[in-house]
Image 1: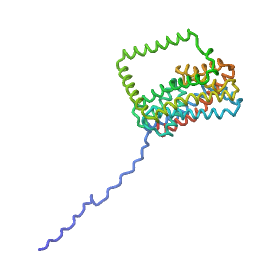
Image 2 (image 1 turned 90 degrees about the vertical axis):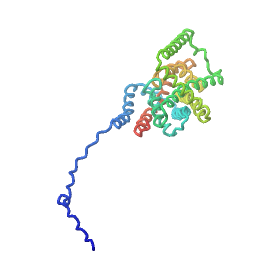
Image 3 (image 1 turned 60 degrees about the vertical axis):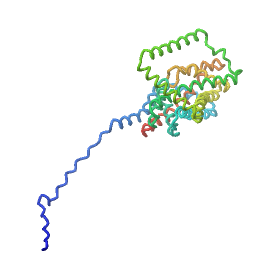
Image 4 (image 1 turned 120 degrees about the vertical axis):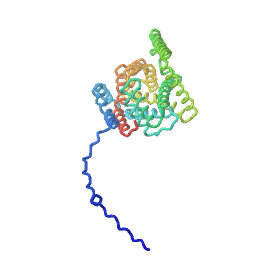
Length: 343
């Protein structure tokens, strides 16, 4: 007995008729996210800062440019070269202050951008903020990144002091210290001020427990990283070699400008003048050290035998080469790093 195949079921009209395609809805324009909008604002902010700086300090730029226009042009390329090498030295110090290996070219670009940001905020806050953000984008934990900034800030004045002492021992006959030593009243006021600041810090740490806990944790991380770094010869060379080379390169800019303007001081005297002035006035929280370091540098050069007018012109020319010349490239680099999400 054979089984006959059953007929195929007939589809109902509702099943047979294809459903109409839904009408195309107009595409909605996505509004930019807050993060994207903030990145666009930060990208354009350096260009705005250039305009603000131009409006605020155009007179200094004009005076410096006029002085450099009358200078001997043979020395100015040397000053430009020393200025460019300062960013290399700063990048070496930053690498030497952290155990992890950082990409060289982005690190150098971050220091060019940090140099421009350094002139916008006092006490190197702008440079440290740019570097801290760069380190975090490279995957460095915040405590270690902050400890590297503290080590950077500590090593620089220590290395500068050793370089200054070495210069005094190498050329004692070229430098007259009698006109540079402050009187007893100035020394007493300086000592009292330093003691008052230290006592205020100790009292603050003793009374505010959360602050004391945070400071102790930070110091613990910083000391651990410092011991680790000093077991790595490459990091030691980058850290201390860069810190010793940086003030010498900055002093080379001063000496180049002074030579181009015919300043009657030797290179050793000009290097000493910069080291002494920046060491004495570098603790004053001015943007990029502009102001106190300039006044101290003019005073030191005059005390070493230079006339006030060419000494002032030398300082103005130095600021043009170290502030105004790298400002536009630094701000553009800062904008590019923000755009590429490296900051």
